[in-house]
Amino acid sequence: MPVTATADTALRVRVHHAIGEPLCYTSVLDMGRHWERLLRRARIPLAYSQGYHPHPRILFAAPLPVGYRATDELLDIVLDRPHSPAGVRALLLAQSPRGLEINEVEAVAPDAPVLQSLISDARYTIELWSPASEEDIRGALAAFESQTEVVRTRERKGRLQEYNLRELFSSLAYAHPEHLPLETEPRVHQHVLEAIARCGSRGSGRPEELIDALGVPYRSYRITRTGLIWSSDKEGAA
Image (cartoon, rainbow, N blue to C red; front, side, top):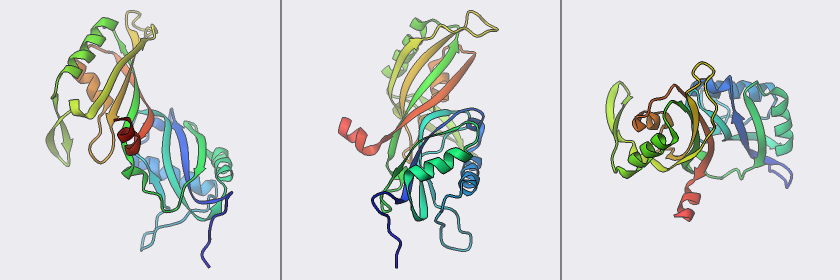
């Protein structure tokens, strides 16, 4: 007899989580291994794939580049027997390493589409420490947005490929200056930018490439992915 979920349990759950230091410096491949170990330690009843090398059915929404922080990442976990989302969250909280925060766990229909197929864009906060003034950075953002093409190159599978960076960013804004100077360079101040960039199978906009394309001097930066945008949300807003 097949096992079915009830009103209080689920066979697939979605984990909303935040990633900070030191976990943000973990590679995409190692991040998957971290989650597998965490789920085993937490004794989550995982469902496994079929075949000679079964793997736990963990479905990530979008890989988080190394060094990025995040405030609301998503992953789905397929269970081999019904479990309450609240119970899964409690088990995860008891085993979560430093740098991982479990925000929420919710039930998802077992036949819901894969997360990667639903994500179209991502929101980012970019903190930039630069000797440039607010006016200089606003001007650089306006100049970038006024262009229809900003050609860049990326290395993929050992080959350099050209792409249009401009089309990967649908929204850019200067949020506010923080006026927090670097301790070693008091004339360098923190500027906060907000961006929406493509994310998914159609290509991804990388905020660090945007920073380079702006052409303003900087000493350091910090990138936080603050949310993922569903394809349906984007279509509804259009």
